[in-house]
Image (cartoon, rainbow, N blue to C red; front, side, top):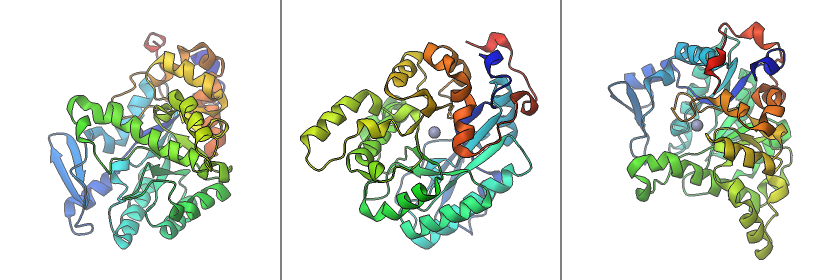
Length: 348
Ligand SMILES: [Zn+2]
């Protein structure tokens, strides 16, 4: 797999989360954003926003960019596209606070990665406030972010809410990629034990959001929308035929199957059998390497691609070519970029 990709596009991880250290310092100060609280317990970071409980924990390395680089070296990844953690998007803040918070977050992301060629960033947007969200999309593009991250719901509404139409129109018009990522606005107490909120809840949030975007016609109305769905699309690919049947039985709904094939899908499914199935439902030109780093879910993101024959045939595209085209990244040779080399025995 390494030999195939050595002279091709860089290996690009499209799904990773970063919290700039300067943001943590600002929250520790407590004055600038008094309604956002930082809680530290040992090495873990947690946050609380108005109207929400304390966030799940983030590992300490989420704010240490040097840890990202050394993990990337060990895993054969040249470039990472860093998203703000969705629990920090501030959707429950009021409009002025949400705008101030997310601009601060976006600016901190850009300044943290400036001067490196190994990271690109996605911006958060104040999605519950569509006009402000459109303005932040424009500001973020000018500042150098390569896309935006969108949570799977906003307080009290789903993503097919007509109020969000200007946001989809702006993203479609500009072609700015939008990473659709689960967000916990309505925690389900049934998912509290055993880490089920992450294992099941996150996929469930994506599935509901995508189902609504597909059947309501939002995605069909905006063919220019470059949406990336995380965790392989949640459970939606597995349910796509049921969704198609729901469309056939629901007058006025939009057909989902063909529109789903226009979406980009990340590879964070952990299981080569699931990745193989996903490639029978969508095309390899739509698949992007992801890891969810620093969250410890996918132990070997690049190795997973090599385990699936249909994926390894399109390895150059999945590992980086598709991402370079989508995000407008330079397609320089991988060896120019990577200081470390992955040892062959690490390829599972
Ligand atoms: Zn994630």
